[in-house]
Image 1 (cartoon, rainbow, N blue to C red):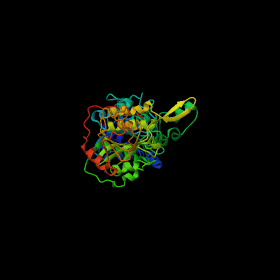
Image 2 (cartoon, rainbow, N blue to C red; image 1 turned 90 degrees about the horizontal axis):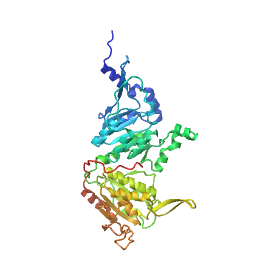
Image 3 (tube, rainbow, N blue to C red; image 1 turned 180 degrees about the horizontal axis):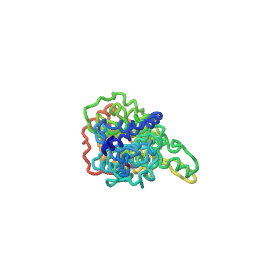
Image 4 (cartoon, rainbow, N blue to C red; image 1 turned 60 degrees about the vertical axis):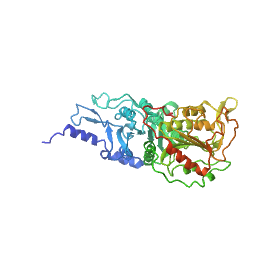
Length: 482
């Protein structure tokens, strides 16, 4: 007579049934698309042997004579280490109920991330939350109910500005999934993916037209309009980028002195007149290969990103005269505002490179239609507010132009709460105001005029003097969701 398996053995069988080995047909189908399974994503992001799953068993069915343990479906949630540092990781499983949310204890993990200041990384592709959980009404005893104070939306809002939040999108991501991405500090999307609040069926019901996810809200469009920070070729590249970005959060110290590009030719990168690309200047001043540009397809008059300077993790904000003379329009102002908030929340000192001919804004007029002219809008003034609440130090260098309020939008007001640690200028910088007490920031108010070849050395010396981030007891502010 065959012995009946014990409850522990049945538990092991239920958990094993969740693995990829138990679903070869699903794995084969995913392989054909060039994507990873939910468990492969987890394994690629988390350090080997570090993961502790939450909520893999969702319920028990006392009336099931076969196996009473009911495995959770739709995704995986866990605590693990990434490059040796703890993090919360969540992934939907788009092959199971469309990846609908309902898996594990995400609200519970939000509370742990808030308490211990652990970063949160999520893979979010699927059709949104389930309208009704498939277990409801089946007489199961639920085991993975809500624990802690947060649900999905308020949990993400609570983490904003307190811990890094990164979303990876590698397929259609709609409704609740897109909301998680929208709350995140960084969104990394693979080419061909899509992010939108309403999926194709909802849109078709509203307008009578069926659109593909890419036509509706493709990643390329989102990249060009500021909806996402980074485009990746595939999930493997997206995971590698997420790891790199978390490295700037975890390892912010100066470390040993680093090698860097020869500075003798840096002045030749900036002509005395005319447009030029700012990226080679950034690459020359920062540690080789360390610069990661964020929102590169949006508001090209400003370049924003993170890098290292002599080993120290920093944020970078720079005018890009190759695009409209570096003029700061509303889109560029939004980019400045959010990047200052992001760097302040991640506790990264800011390096600002200024070469802008001023500010501009777009107006709507019934008679003239849409037109652009020199001026400011309320959007521009958000930059001043973000600098007023900024607590991280800032170093600035004006390369050429610095007209109007452009320098103040990029570095803060000259009498504000957090003025730059250093305000340097190159010899070709404009000196266009004689009155040092003028209302707008005095374009002549520099700490020193420096040889371009000495810029890197001066910045590296100063960055080593700045204090490292402390252990904050509360967040300063959230990061703008857009």
